[in-house]
Amino acid sequence: MFMKITDKKVLITGSAKRVGAALALAFARKGAKVLLHCNNSRTEAEEVLTALPGTGHALLQADLSDASQVKQLFSAAGKTDILINNASRYLTGTLTDETPAKDREQLEVNFWAPLELMRAFAKQDIAEGCIINFVDQEVLKVPRNGIYSLSRRMLADATLELAAELGPENIRVNAVAPGPVIPPVQFAANGMKKTLPTLPLRRKVELDDLVDAVLFLTGNDSVTGVILPVDCGQHLT
Image 1 (cartoon, rainbow, N blue to C red):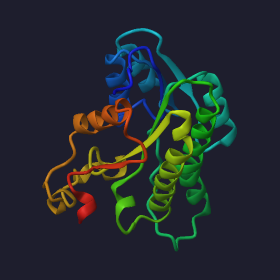
Image 2: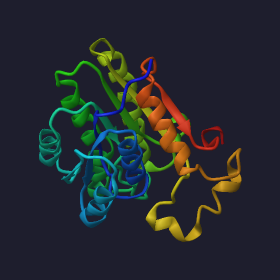
Image 3: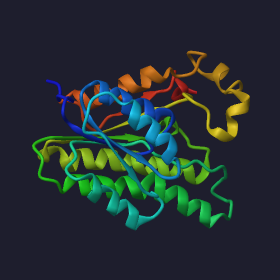
Image 4: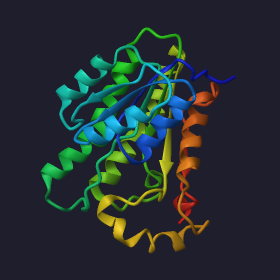
């Protein structure tokens, strides 16, 4: 069986640009009522909101590195059927770097905020629910990106634990582990030229393929506790 997306309310964090904006459009086209979330990119989020087909959409603003704003975000969203934890923060560094401010920011945005949103989601009185977390293909192999990798692995572990814990409440919890889709802003200039030749499929992940994976995990009522790599085989390297 498949969860009906039409008229469901979906909260997508980090949906002003890039993957999040594509997800917002895809869910709106399926008839969902989309709650866009942004932090600093309000102008871009308003443009996405205007472009969404259908009605019942809204824009919410919150800094996910601030625990109090995370709580306010879900409170403002109201009863929600689908939660997509897409927002992330990537700052370069290794575990031996002494950068406590950067470490804290990445852990707050990449792990603690999604966890708090999932806890709030689980407390709702809903007949069925679905949570999709965005992690990284690195969670399936030895990580090499410091606190960023650690925060993604923590969220992957939480995905599996909550899938087991919330299953009896008819709340499914899954994750997607993307590979190279759109390069981070700080690496946009190189166009992923070094990475793509190392992948088994020798190409970047198509944005539509990533969106389709999220829609599949959202819709399939028998799938929970899955971390799905959508990475052109990067986790194999």
